[in-house]
Amino acid sequence: MKKLLLNFVLLISLSAFSQTTTPFVIEHCKDKMTDKEYFFASKKIICANPEKTKGFTISPNFKSINGKIANNGLSCKNVNVGSCDENDSLIILFEDDTKITLNAWNKFNCEGNAYFDLTETQILELSTKKVGTIRFSNGYSHESLTIALKQDQKDYFIKVYTNNKIVEVDCSK
Image (cartoon, rainbow, N blue to C red):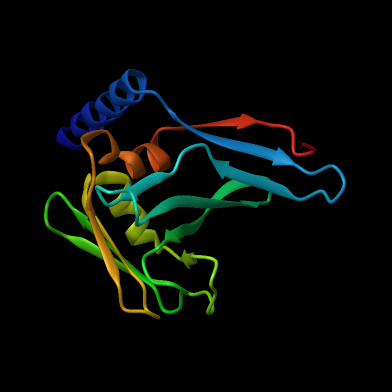
């Protein structure tokens, strides 16, 4: 009985949370020419130094599996944190002082691109904990940038993974 009551309270709490916050928009389109489906995050986390001369963005990636949305890791766009990129890493420090360390899987490039896979455990942490600080480290130049998130950014991943809304868009444009 206690378990049933606890589940009911949890369900009501989650329902109340999702109704009082604006859902995170994920855009979905299907290319009619190739029959490929795409999902795009409508917003990214933007992290920059106070002078706005260095920074990085983080965006969740999604894919379609049998017509349903599925996680496909994170992408990061680095601007002036080193020159080229290779063996980059992200450290995501949560407000409870636990952290996730991610290592990029992509090869050397000079476009500022880094891609990171997420495990189910990491997605669970991102979907339940507020983020305090993120550090991007360039593995090629060994430069890094650490940014404390603004208050309105701290629950970004919680919204992405638990309170999202898929909106259909036109791929042909």
